Image (cartoon, rainbow, N blue to C red; front, side, top):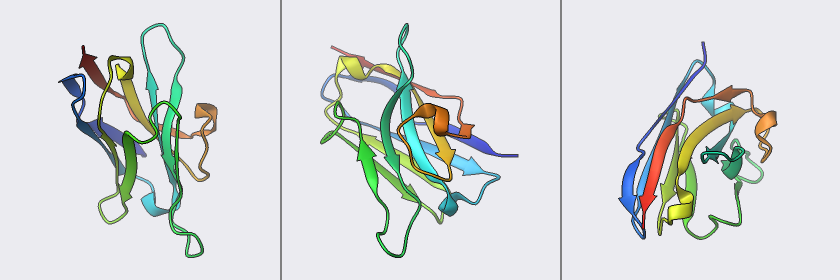
Length: 126
């Protein structure tokens, strides 16, 4: 049974930082690409960042939405089966429920992902 469990969300002031974690089980983590998505009230789920599975030719590739580029960093620890999202310089418009997702192939389209966590709330106050 595949499980993805996010943690690390909370309330933070604008300009602050948070680090989200996504602990996984039931899958061979190193063979999956991982993504972070977010959904604000009344809006569709949107891509935040993704990281490919490790390749001996190119290592790990990372991808970011333009809205978070330079502020957020996605990373993974294959030994701990855990995905991370370091979020700096947070803005009120970053307020959303953040989800992690897993799929064999990296993608920015949420429909491409097979497995999802339950989400963690991030609220940024102005």
